[in-house]
Each structure stands twice: as C-alpha cells, then as structure tokens.
Length: 247
Image (cartoon, rainbow, N blue to C red; front, side, top):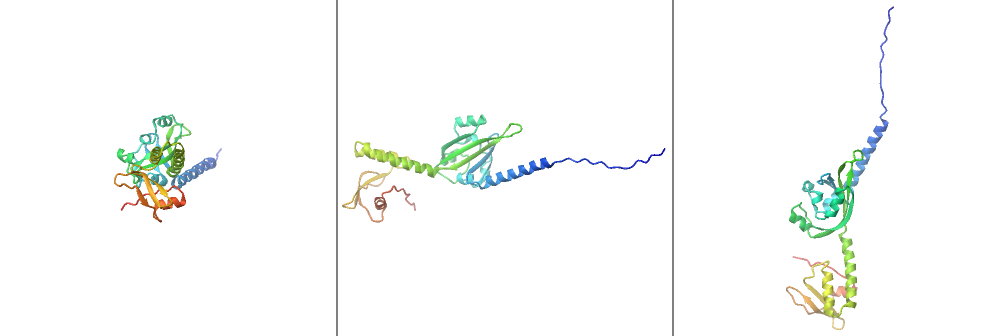
C-alpha cells in the first residue's frame, strides 16, 4: 500500500516579554542615572574596585578646579589626603562612610596628585558608598558624593568668633588680654599677623589704636573719614571683612 507523506512545518515560540521589560527598565534606569550624574549640582566621582578613579561629573571637576578629566585617571581614592585611616578601614569592610574635612589644594600640588586651578583651603562634606554586584555580591567599585560647604562653615566660624570676642570683653582682666583674645580668634579665619585694633572717639571723630602689630607701618591715631571702612562699620554696627586689592 502506497502512502503519501504530507509535508509539514514546525515552529517554536518563546515569550520574552518579561525579559524585554527587564532590559527596557534597566536601560531607563541607566539613562536616569547618567542624567543625574551629569547634571547634579553635587559632585559625584566613580572609582573601580581597586580605588582608581574612572569618572567624575561636571560639578566635581569644577569643585576641585580640574579642567581635564584625564588628570584623574591615575588618582586612587585611598591616596586622598582627606580620607583618614579609620575611614579607609571602614570602606575596605564594605561599609559607607560620611564625614566632613578641610581640603588643602596647596598640599595636593605639593604631592603632585593632579593639577588644580584652585589654591588655599576649602571645607567639603563627603559620602562614599561601596557599589556591589547584587548577583555575585562582588565589589564593583565606589561612588563618592561631595559638596563644598566652605561658605556655611565660614559663617558658623564667624558666628562663634563674634560670641567668643563678646565673651572676652566681659571676662578679660585688662585690655591687653582682650586684644590677645581678639587676635587668636581672628587668626581662625584670616591671617592676623598684621593686626590693627582701633577705638573710635565720637567727640573728636578720631580712631585711636592701643594695639597695632604691623610689619611695615605704625598707625596709632587717624581721622575716621566719611567714606572709609571704619566709618561704615561704626555707622552700620556690623562685622565687615574685605580683601585689599592688589595691583
């Protein structure tokens, strides 16, 4: 008996909807992070598992005075001058650290860690978080977030300085002790090596200085001119700081 074998086709289908949704969600998450990373006003830096820097956003580069990100390719997180030995140990244990620290840009230049257009000191607030692979539980690297809080710290220091000087006017035994306290307090925020402390006489309109420590000049008595800085302080009864222009 002859049998005719009919041709047929076979197809297999696999529903990958869930996988596709996961991939799309992951892509959207990465795009959101990249946008946040690039545009965030908070400085953000990324490091690999060995501590070498791999990326930094615009806010971080500006904060540290860095124009070329390639300057950072050889920088290691654990060589940072602001990271204490205790915080290094905490990070090596896989835990986050949060701290505030003075950042000395001149020290960075001495160590030749990277080139910065900034100089002097700033006060930064840091948060460093280890990044883990959720699947294998292996360390991927570290994310550092940093904010410049120099202005806030300076305001806090000035407020404390004002309190300390006001308190000194009450507890000082004599005027020389008071002036010594004033010099110590001012040295916390400015270089008070050349210091001129004056008393104003309303009747004569003259400013008299019982204490004048200056490397070049000796000023003991002068007129309080109408548009001068002393006249402004006397009229407004406010604390006033300014930098003399250098030509």
